[in-house]
Image 1 (cartoon, rainbow, N blue to C red):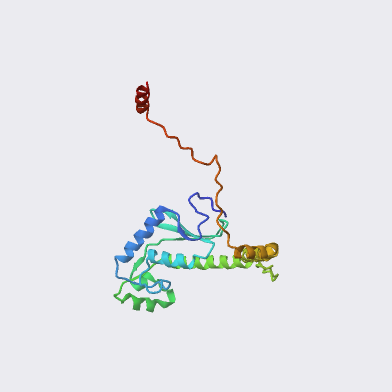
Image 2 (image 1 turned 30 degrees about the vertical axis):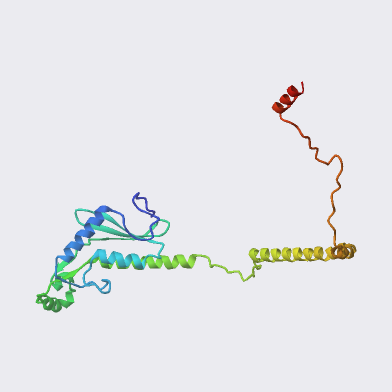
Length: 254
């Protein structure tokens, strides 16, 4: 049977309450458990807790089923009668098992919580004299059965999956480009040094014929050369009279 209800989240993996009405009923059941001092007889209450609270069970159940790919869904059946359904569905959305349960706890004397068989009537009479108040929640037994069914489905799913084959082939070594680049730069530097050494070695060979002339010129004391004085280079000096004196001189001569 395939799930066709729209509010079912088929991608959810683990435990989910898919109806708001179911959430309200579970919350009401928790309030009823907290308001009583009864001794609960549930054997599947999470370790470290004494009361069958759905809020506590949901936390532990979600952690246990976190790796399970199947779903445990809780939906409403009858709001007036406080009936909810616990559904186990696989990863494809197909329902495998379904339970209907009332999450409200049953509270009373021992023989009221746990009805005795006919052949044990004396035990029932003995328990009826017990003044203590006991309680029992059918939801916890149903959820335990649903969790076992979900674990079984998950085990079958893991067995049906193909085995992962591992290759023993050795891969080629990946070259380190940074190391390759550093070696290339080092070779280029060495080549440049060799070329510079060859260039410096050729300089003395080329200048060898001029070394003797250079030594001779360094030993000769060069005298300062006197510049030649020519007629053109002589400075022409003319004795000129001022214009006023020249006019006075002419007037006297006349």
